[in-house]
Length: 165
Image 1 (cartoon, rainbow, N blue to C red):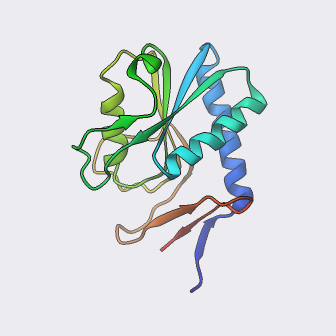
Image 2 (image 1 turned 30 degrees about the vertical axis):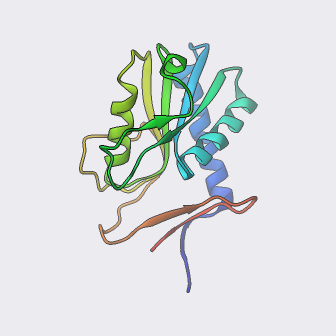
């Protein structure tokens, strides 16, 4: 089967670097920020953004894995760090693809249980099919697709790509 590649490895690397610069510009006045990646691909993307940030800035970055039941977002959301660790800090919630906005909106809601200085969202692919009023502050690419199409992001060693099905 022929994959409809929308982003190849080099393009994804470029987008990650650009997102890192945007995050640095937004949070340059902060001592520490939290990159909260939604479990699986969102967390992998957060790790890659963290690596890019280390190359360009002196920001202290703490990674946080966010576990959300995407089929039932009302289930409890867990994070790999305690609430005290992200209280009164700048947070960037990271996911690979913004489809309907459900995952991001419930992720944002979870972090608003504590006071935060600044809250932003970052995605690699924004599909423009939102059910909720949530937007990506930092995005690699905006893509208008039909609601029947799906975007998949694959992170492999030296072979990252995103494709449309």
